[in-house]
Amino acid sequence: FNLPEVNSSSAETANSIAIDHLQNGADGIYFKMDTHWRAEKLIHDIKPEFCFLGFEADSPSVSFFEEFTSLVSPAALIGSVFWNGAKSWLPVANLFKGYTAFRAFGITEFGESATVQVFNSMAEALKLTDLLTDYAFPVHQVFNQLAFSVNASFNFFGDIIKIRALRLLIHRLAEAYGLENANSFIRVKVHAPVLQSHQPHGDLLANSFGAI
Image (tube, helix red, strand yellow):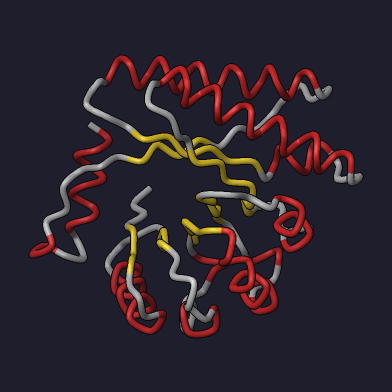
């Protein structure tokens, strides 16, 4: 997918950039959240039913998503949100209950080595699953809204091994909860150079470079 990142201190500016990308062939957008954004201004004239909407957010952004979910129906929303820093999973789960095509439990890897990154991601997934199932959330719903974000490097074989190991462990975790066919969602974030002079096509070129 061509999913350019949009980052701005102004929701209006982010909206304008996003619409320009979508009108020039992007499949969706990843917004790098600003805690001062208003949802109504950010998604003005964007049709969620026709594109992927992704977010990178901090825990204080939950108030944004309270407004966001009041504007977008569960049936119309496809996308994900990846949380940075301390996470409060229960408020997130309550907000996105019923948004079955939206991956609201986005876990971002952290750690110095690939082994530590995979371990930390799976530990967070286990903690999240235990918490939400204790509050009577169906385990299949939790896994359907679970997502992982990993960073790619130029160590191609190392990244392939890391991603395959993560996918295998996700399925092992699902099996431990009695699920046979877990639908895992892993975003591989490629830090490819973006030619700003070629925007809005610069992101398409960067994604193509990253895929290689």
